[in-house]
Image (cartoon, rainbow, N blue to C red; front, side, top):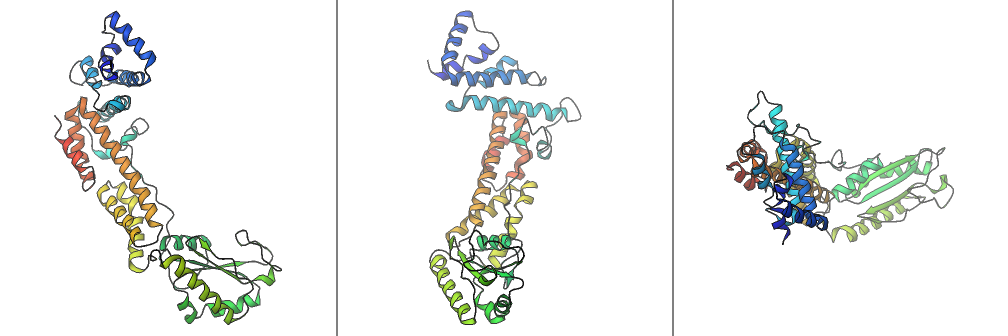
Length: 368
């Protein structure tokens, strides 16, 4: 006998309505079948939780029989447990209402109703990555961390310069690098200048200076999409600076330009603003616009080299999974309480507008 046929008997088994011979056969099968044991566990949870639903229509045994009609044969236990969670949802929602048989509350109330017991209806959150504070601009940044973020999200190579605050050669080099004509040569880089104090010697990301600490600086290197150069130490004259910059520009062309273009200008600004708005959109229940932003950002990967793309892919997956769980919970509720599931679906319809789940939710609004 297949598990599906055994599971058809579990409602009667859970309510002790089987005759002794059949109950004995069910017990023997349960000893050997982990899948049916898990399914029975779900049915028993539903039975225990059903005592909290005095207004539920129909006899308890009939509802338990309905719970064992498995629509997805390989996911029976999870379906029954989900059905139980949906039943708890109705109970707690009604308890928070103004009377014993109030209308099902709004979606906003659902998101705050016993989230520990009802993860499907807890507030949906999407973690925002540590984004840059502003678009890349001309000039030298002072924060290594912020410069790295800008390089990652813009796709531009990072040009890092390390100097010592009392080094005369560093002062001279800085004056030349800060000139407008030099800054124009550096526009394709995200530039950061890290100033170190002589009394606090330190290595550059694990690279020890080749000479005495003071004699080695200034130092420069480029990280172009993970292709990092060795530091150039003790730059002493303008010709050497020009040669270093030319070499770095050539490296960046080879490492980046042949692949995908950096994300710059107005498109970078728009993408940064839109990605920064995702938590607010999700908190407001505007899941369709949030998914639209993430889909547009994912599409940038076809043309641009930017960390926005993998972050958008991650966030799109997290948000879609959360919405799918919510729809699945409503579908389970519709099996035993179709009228209430329909009311809930209508409450949630504006939040799901424009999402891939809109059609499924619309079908639930017609549940009877």
